[in-house]
Length: 233
Ligand SMILES: NC(=O)c1ccc[n+]([C@@H]2O[C@H](COP(=O)([O-])OP(=O)(O)OC[C@H]3O[C@@H](n4cnc5c(N)ncnc54)[C@H](OP(=O)(O)O)[C@@H]3O)[C@@H](O)[C@H]2O)c1
Image (cartoon, rainbow, N blue to C red; front, side, top):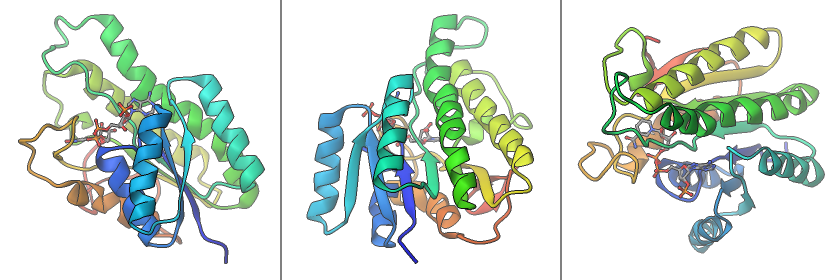
């Protein structure tokens, strides 16, 4: 069988870069994407220097033209996409409460963390259907859990809760297909977003994504995972 083709958003650094590194080592065809072509090329070259077979393409998940361009690239180059990893994310309301957050900050966060995965998934799911195979992994956050919801970081939390809702909806709407979609939390990870005091390495943060990606056949859909175990929504 041909190599599985996986597209990773926000692949130039942090957890996304580590996902690309590990999946390339697992012999998948990895399309590393980044909104900044320079940063993306540098990241792809670093992985190539380590011996990985990496394809780079620009993708800003908050830009409809950029989403259309990568779709055309994937269709023309491969005719299919097996796995989509919605990893790109921003966290720009660290000091804010729901009581005082500017709506512009919430909107901006939703553009990347929610609308990006929504539009990308809508674009690629028909292609996955055509090929009768698809896996989508939404990199969410334990902070999105409604069961454990507390105050603070309103835009970030709400964007990831909305992303989780999308996981459930797509999963229900695709129940009669071979397309499986799940959310996961990487835990608190040492990246630009997580900060240097975080408890986990990028390798640990990527672990559940890799596990979900490699479950090629027959895994559950519409679930939320942390450390390879199901957690409350
Ligand atoms: N680190 C944690 O503790 C933690 C905890 C829970 C969940 N997460 C989630 O894990 C995912 C990865 O985060 P990280 O910790 O690896 O953060 P990171 O190091 O800040 O990386 C974020 C990535 O997203 C990219 N990005 C941002 N906006 C984008 C856009 N519009 N289009 C395309 N790419 C965009 C960034 O690109 P630029 O370099 O161009 O900015 C960067 O590559 C995020 O979804 C985050 O919410 C992280």
